Length: 163
Length: 232
Image (spheres, rainbow over the protein chains, first blue to last red):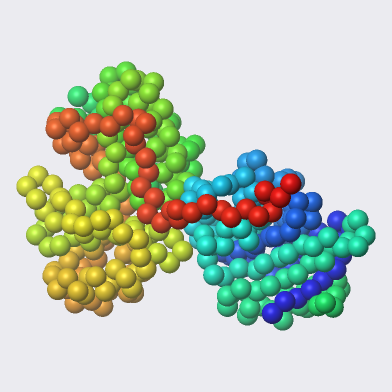
């Protein structure tokens, strides 16, 4: 089941992500999707803030993986430069997901066969205005679907109609 | 002949130097994720302890997994760099062989299992042979239940060793013919690596650095279907 929200600037996207991060538990996986410039890294910055990460979060497009220390550690991956599913294994994803940390993967929807069945999909869609974003949350697997109501509550301030 | 062994396939990591006289010096840490930071200082330490210059090393042996990718990358890259720099050959030994090797004095079937994370194990079966162990069948990846059913099917007395066996101990403890080896043997050791590599070196079973690759058992072999990226 999908939860839909709407934000009108980058900072409110960060605030929404930060609110979601409050619900994160060890070994969680969040899959981020949306076009280039949709705000995936912006979302990660807010999510990191919610996890208490002090370091500045930058795009990992060229480093592939960056890890940050917070209330829960955060692994931030971007698979945009990968060509083979096997390269996901080279990133040590299995260990990251088993490490009491939270993992966010930009473009994660492109590598679903290499991912476990439990994850939260966050889809960022460009809105009518330049800075407007429609944010769709979809829970996959019981780990996240058990938190469906809490997710709805956490982002109630930005709730939008599912149209 | 002096062999430097580097072992980083699990949360534990270690290095050892040895040859005809056995292991001369070794260092290991039981847990942690600082393989990259600790490995080279540890190699310097054991060289100093054994009063050996790196230039005296004639073979670099390395654990090629299966195991944890982060550790394997560090260990194999370090081993290859040293082999290139010293212009010496390499010997790659699978992690599960290293787990089974210290169990070589039993005539029971030996099952070695490494925690592959995400609810899975890397495992293989071994039997004692004169002077060592021999793997029976391939390295496998599967759930603890997969391994348990293989153990049941074998109808043999079995010694089960490895951190994978302990992580899922509740799956194996009730099995009548299976004995779990204690934690002291749960990780592949650099000492076993040097011993096994020595036996291979005597048979001149060397590899060139370019040919030493990690064993990736569950690497999917498919291209990512990039619709978005290829769009102009």
